[in-house]
Length: 162
Picture 1 (cartoon, helix red, strand yellow):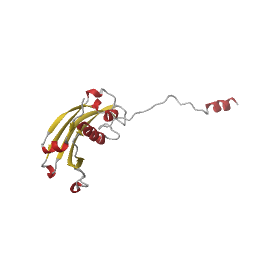
Picture 2 (tube, helix red, strand yellow):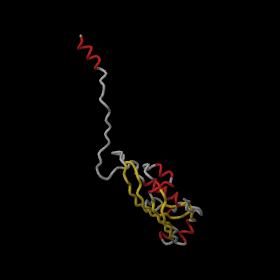
Picture 3 (cartoon, one colour):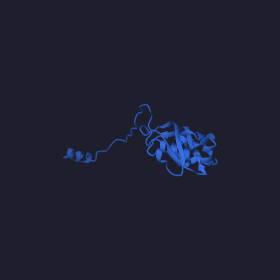
Picture 4 (tube, one colour):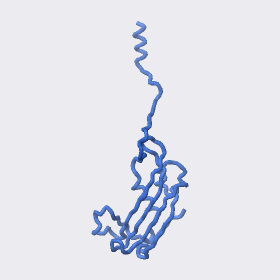
């Protein structure tokens, strides 16, 4: 699979649109954080739209939809983590002052070769929960060891012999 490189400023000015799918196995950092279940079958759907009118600056809107195989940290069983994410970016050489502190809008540096696959992977890595758990109450894993041996049993036997 090839990286998708775009000139993000021209893309926004021309109000471009690109959508597609990326194999999870192709995104190495994200794939390493998921359960080892046929990652080549998992697809990450994305859509990137460019705009000139939103926020009166060149901007991008990214939508990501996917289901990732992860391990529930409560019961240690495999589960499917569904993610539907949207992001708005303002394109600028430096962070625009008017959006400083605005949690809703991020900014991206203008780039003639922005790697869309890396952007999608970065956003998914940030969005993944630190310790995913099932939405329903799954039972916690119970670890049982064999029968415990009491080291003082030897003394007890000696006491009984006397």
